[in-house]
Amino acid sequence: MKKLFLILILVTLGACSNEDKKPPKGIYDTQQIAVFLKDLYILEMKVKELRLSEDSTKKVFAYYEQELYKKHNLSDSIYHESFKHYINDIQGLSKIYEIVVDSLSLEERIETVMDTTENDLQQE
Image (cartoon, rainbow, N blue to C red; front, side, top):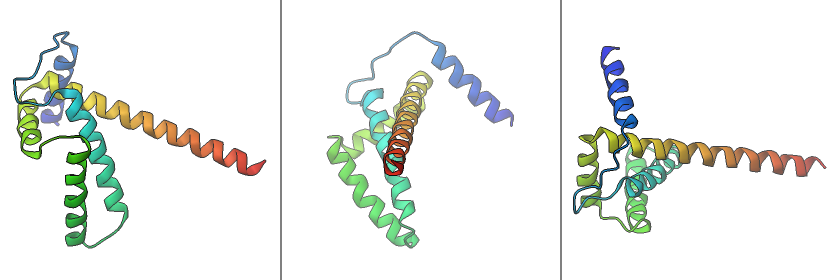
C-alpha cells in the first residue's frame, strides 16, 4: 500500500510540472509511444478474446505486434530503448499514460454512442 501511495505521489508530481522536455536523440517522443501503446493494448484485448491456447495466443500476438510496429513505422529496438528512457522520466511516462487513457476512454465513448445509435435505429 505504501508503494502504491509513493508511486501515485511521484506520478502526480511529474504531471504537475510544466516543463515539456524533448527526448534524447534516437528516442521516440511521448506521442509516438502513447499512440503505439494504445493500439498495443487494444491488440492484447482482441487476442485474449480469441480464447486460444497460451502458445497460440503468444504466436498470434507476436505476429500482430510486428504488424503494429510496421503500421506506426517504429523499430521495436528503438521502441524498447524509448520505453526504458520513459521509465526513468516520470513526467514523460505520466504524459504517455495520460494520452493512452484519454484515447481509450474516447474510443470507448464513441463505441457506446455508435452502439446506442444503432440500437435506436433498429427499434424504429
